[in-house]
Image (cartoon, rainbow, N blue to C red):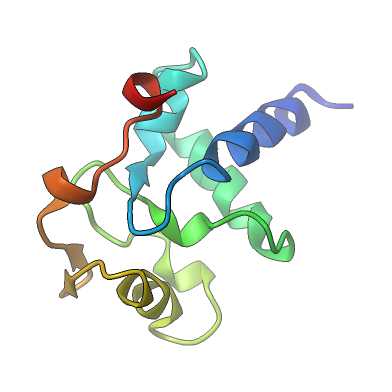
Length: 109
C-alpha cells in the first residue's frame, strides 16, 4: 500500500464525519490529520472518492467557501444541488454564511 493510499483513507474517514448541512475545507481536513500544508492532497483524495458512495465529497470546499471541486461531479451543478438539498445556500459557486455552516474537525472531533 502506498503512503498516499493511507492518507486518502484517513481523509475519507474524516469526510464521512462531516454532519449533514455542514461543510469543511481541504485545509481543515489536512490540519486535523497533522498535515497542515496538504490541502491540495486532500483535494486529490476528494477527486478520487467519486466511486465511493459513502464519502460526502460535496461537503468539502476551499477555505473561502468556493465550490472549487464542482467540475469533478457529474453534471454542471450537482455539487451545488447536493449542498442546497442540505439547506446550504450557494450563490455564484460561493457558500453563503460560511462561518455558520463551517465544521472544523479539529474543534469538533
